[in-house]
View 1 (cartoon, rainbow, N blue to C red):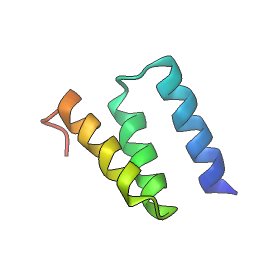
View 2 (cartoon, rainbow, N blue to C red; view 1 turned 30 degrees about the vertical axis):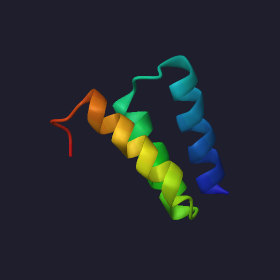
View 3 (tube, rainbow, N blue to C red; view 1 turned 180 degrees about the vertical axis):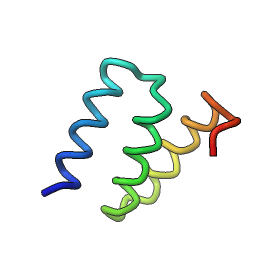
View 4 (cartoon, helix red, strand yellow; view 1 turned 90 degrees about the vertical axis):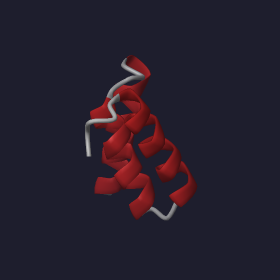
Length: 55
């Protein structure tokens, strides 16, 4: 489905660019929608550490 495709794309982007705040936030949203709140929270924490000014 679409969530699986989105997750794959975000993970590929993070493999190439681990500091991609956009990919971290996107993957966080996908993981939240798939019910993995712990991973979602960790991803958003990492994104915030990299760019605290981003919402």
